Image (cartoon, rainbow, N blue to C red; front, side):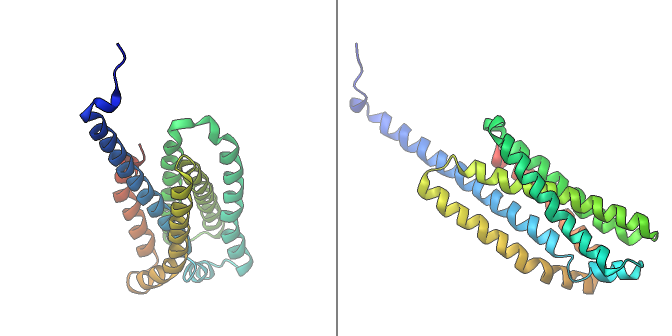
Length: 212
């Protein structure tokens, strides 16, 4: 016989529990996406006050410094295009894209920090370009995958949380150079990179857990 769901007093409770669980999951995901957006931009922009000084110290001209900074933007454009074109193939495992992209940004940060130990100009530039390229690939993939994840939310939630992620993006660009300059002033060239790498590694397990 047919069962009248309306007569089941527990159905409403189950529905409320499912909704609460869904909201809890969404909140964790959005927090992680905002953290990724903030860290991605802060870890890149924090080098702007002092990287040119280190490059000049190593004998690198301002032209090459400009190319180094521009390399990340080029890689980010390439990554955003390719990941956006293939994102539909990832389906429910879109979070894996973010995890791999975050590892690329960690490699970028660690690589740029290692430059303090490099004296050869050519090696300095090679590591700089490679690090920036990896970081650009990671940043582009993160941004695209984040928007793809938000696309599964409702219209009102999606618009609200996109605003949150964009705000985190702006805060990263705002506080990155400030934090980088302060840490460079008190701890030297490697201090900002070591700090951001450590924060990434500490937060990585939470990001992985919250996006699954």
